[in-house]
Image 1 (cartoon, rainbow, N blue to C red):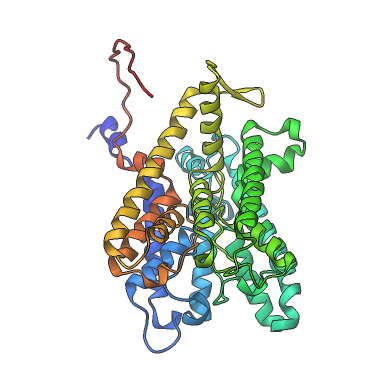
Image 2: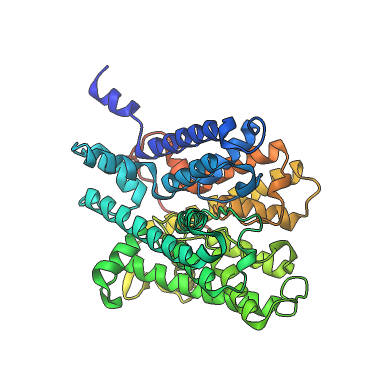
Length: 446
């Protein structure tokens, strides 16, 4: 076998990413299926263990069984470790282990890291990974300490520390897992918990490249175009979601009726930002107006930012398509924002991501209408979008999923975490450039 054939048969970074996440999920499922991981006699069904492991590694937060009451401390720690691995990516930890052991990180592994971190270059990737780990653990430790101070008088020193660490890791990695049976509904008007948890998952959802850029440059004028787009889109979506949810739900007695003005404001704020793939909730989402639920579906579909712990089509993808659409309407030949031109390759990539993602969500929703016949379509579409966007919010559909429905959601969470293009590249053959050129011809559109 010659060298060319060997290179042709080698797995590309996208395929290694798919395999790595799949192996991590399977290991987590087997561990969660152990009797020691669950409360009571015997273990849970393997499908439920696989669902929970997938949700943890894909930092989604959808659960078919309650995390706080059905899993032992051992099981909860396994879930927390899976969240940490899934949030930062297994390649990140591979690099850290290699550095600790004193091994060099070769070019092949740097390419894998570049795919995992969404970096534009392979230079300085090891240093970038170290920075990512430091940033992540710093945020999680600070968040855990602040939550511990908040809960210490209610729970005691040990339990408060454990709950604080679990929720800080879950929040920063945009996982949405909670040890409280009602998620965070008990803290609907608590400013401390609302601020700490939301800041953790907002920062985690910005992306590590953005956080490093902010830390190093610290001035808007010096930020990269990607950072500016992410920050602008995040602010617009968060503010717009807050105002719309507050306006829609202000007179909704089934959810906001018994809340004070302050609790209504905090609730509208939290629900608007948690849709950015965080998965926590402070009110019963099934009681919201259909208009609010549809708005949340739209926000979940957009999701967080590239290279972050969140899912969705990503904020930069959404903004690039909006800017491209605006430029087309204005008759401009070039697409530009913040005095920088966007390449047509980037625009076509963004368009492909959105079309594939939308198609995937609709196909999943269609399949769920066949398996979950007792649920309304808005509930099914909400569930499909939440799974794809790795959000973890539900209209009480997840606990009642059928076996087939669980398998569909497992596959959707997996696809959503990896991203549609990563899966497409992983399934495709090696890229081959064509030497044939064809004449151009106009086609009527619109």
